[in-house]
Image 1 (cartoon, rainbow over the protein chains, first blue to last red):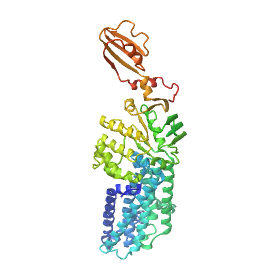
Image 2 (cartoon, rainbow over the protein chains, first blue to last red):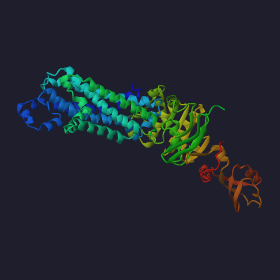
Image 3 (cartoon, rainbow over the protein chains, first blue to last red):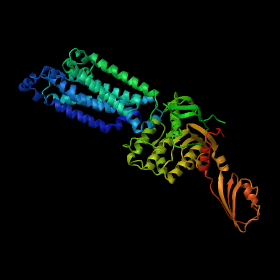
Image 4 (cartoon, each protein chain N blue to C red):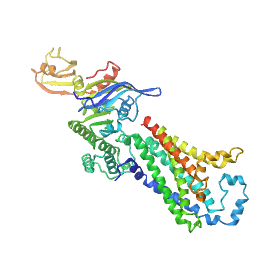
Length: 264
Length: 303
């Protein structure tokens, strides 16, 4: 019984959501399952001979522990990037994508306010993010034994996945806001992808430069894994920043969407 | 008379330097079919999008069903049905899926109503929408606009490119709605689509409502080509001073002429003669429409 914009969005996205869930499970678990191979002395020695700057730029400084390996490769890189692609696309589609496809008019000619429509759509995206991250969490718990990282408690994984969910929400709401404010798919993509690139540069490359170490604190990738939630549990400051910015993006996007003309 | 259903006063809409609407005044009364006629780019869709609060006017006042679209949009849209000329939806769902959802969103449309309307229009609800022809897609649009029996129907070029069967179905649906006390506001760029169904026609040009006429008075004031065949050539002077008759050309027993307005004077003038045949062309309102255009921004009249 689909009777809300929220439920309709989730139902209409079911195939795409299933695809993304499988992709993230497949790639995430695939990389995680690689841990026993990485966990040998020869490889670790090889890595130790790499210049420290390169290891830091790749966030590979603590790759000898399962927490460090999973944090740096699985969450901090590959799954994080996949989540960005998924959420920027989903956040864009909520308003700008439909508007450019000319199918937003129908929804907006129904007895639903723009604010309600926008909030229901972004809530649906966040629901999808939470679902994907939760399924991935269960998969990692199952994989923990076979892939030899069973020493990491489930609660630490939960903390890591909480960081991942808010990290994904951050990019979803940013793309949503850019699309809602402009009505242009291109702007939503550019802003979302630009923010991702910037965040990546801020966490890896730029801090290598003399005097620029501090920029690391302003990267979404730092908020995702900089405090190593797998080793240390949830970092409330980082979670707070991501949640606060997400709320801000939702508020600004919805406010701008309410004020402007909807394109034909 | 009851309060008008749509009132727009001094409606202005600027897009940067282009002026889509330049002070449009409009009044639509309850229980009528109002045809909103004009060429592409005259401002028809812009006006309609303002009525629905999809865009906001630069200046001017709008009231629809006594509500302000800007502040009372939800309540307003609950009471109206809207169809855009090029009805576009996510084509991956079936018509049934979409219409059931829209019905639930509105909260007042039983599925049986959707099935009944689809049957009337001869539409199969099961296939995905992207596999439907343009005509069938427009049927889905017609159903979603009419299914909750709204007080006001706002239809943007509802019949452009539809086959005669569907045009006829549309005319029937609009007439039924009006008979039930509803109001229909429809735009078109083709007079022949509007004249069958509308009571009044407003002509929009360059963002201004140029003129409003009742279709009946347009018919009355229109020129029609007539041909009368007599048994014998009529006596000279028969057609002198006949009211409304002009361009008289007698070809033996055959009269060719143009008749402005009523046919009464002509009929009386030839009543004493033996008439074998009388042909009067259906007045071409399209022609009048273009005359109105040619007259351009002549004074605006409201009928």
